[in-house]
Image (cartoon, rainbow, N blue to C red; front, top):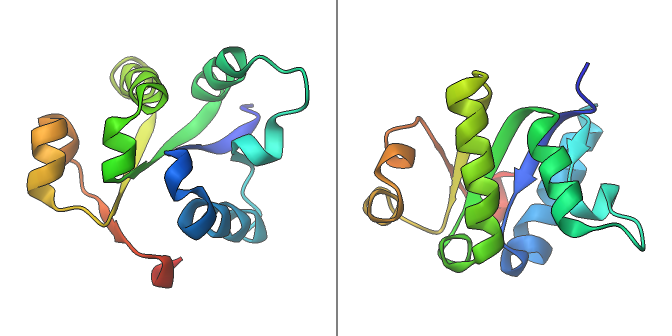
Length: 124
């Protein structure tokens, strides 16, 4: 059994306005959520916790925004999730936050091919 139902990959820029409310809502729906604010403790190694989250989640939830596309950590997380998608059949669920399909396709054409959810803070 995996420790988390879903691992949320996101840019810290999107945390307060969108990702925090989303993660809380998923928990209200009885989902086990791999989200930094829920699982990181003082002294934890960030890279190890990310690797654990990537390896031990049933679903990868990608909150793709302009900030997401510009961060090194999110690219690392995306690589791990894509590897699980290909190797282990882990489901990727892209949420497009304030971006268009064309922007996603320019960033990563394979992501633009996945059925995605257009996200706003109003549809959490």
